[in-house]
Length: 170
Image (cartoon, rainbow, N blue to C red; front, side, top):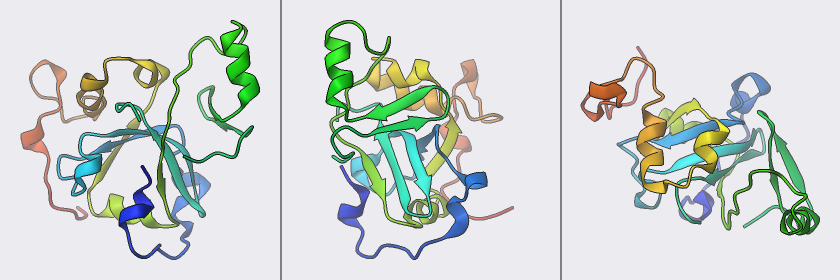
């Protein structure tokens, strides 16, 4: 799934994705107001976010394009790879201790993700390997939302009633 497929014009390059504002190694959690049905209740682990655009893996859906053999190191000790050698190592028992096979990705043109965040389509929360590799796909969106500080409802769950669908600044 490539988000660029349903947007007509890429945004001009923006410095908003500078190193200080990079979302690499964090989760994008589809806000309850996510307008695109394909991405409602999605949790995306951001692997790349810079002036050239953004790339993430949807970790709560069973889900095209690192060049064959490329490995992208991600903060927090994780990596995204298309390396056949690493897959062979895993099959032989000498590869990474934990792995998740993803058959697709979400990608954004330069500036597009920043615009979607301004439109209140995505929430950002800290990521961790436990949630990335958890196999309870149905619970991941709620568990990611529960990471939002100050929005806890009964039992520490994110209270959807507390979320404003209006975008803006305080």
